[in-house]
Length: 195
Image 1 (cartoon, rainbow, N blue to C red):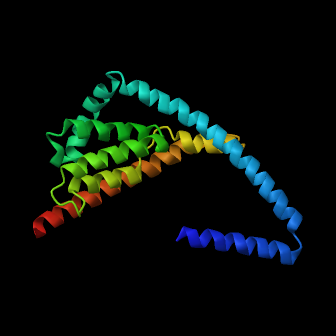
Image 2 (image 1 turned 90 degrees about the horizontal axis):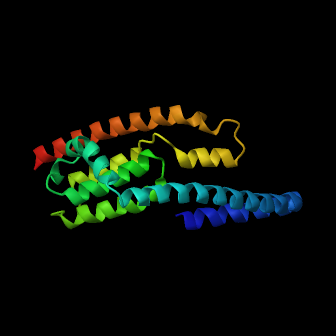
Image 3 (image 1 turned 30 degrees about the horizontal axis):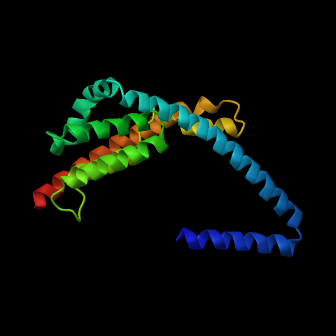
């Protein structure tokens, strides 16, 4: 779908610029946006490298085991089907930690790895298991204590106070997670009754 939408926008923009005599503004806009994109990319790259390095160090220490033990009651409540699957719980806790730190780019490969592991033990390969459904909801809500990506973007765009977004992000992500978890638990319960 986006392969159709974006070319249409580009063609319309160029056509409008040509017919309205704004070719100079279009060229200037292209050059400025290219410069801004490179600046933003470098800024985000630095932030991502820092946090991905911290996550990699944490993976090589017993910090992950401590975090997994800390998150164990929450994970057991959210994923009751994974009682004996300690490796999957570890992958889920890594993903949750990356999301909490606002590292969407680091959380994505960890989430994909956890989903692949859950799919291996899934009885019905053509459907999501209850645990997989809950995992998608939790990742979509993505509770963030430190929204590093958003802060980095705001900082690169010259925000006077790039961290002012932190408290609203807490409210939004925690509320989304709570309502998402409740709705998913209700849906799981209803589908189990129907079976």
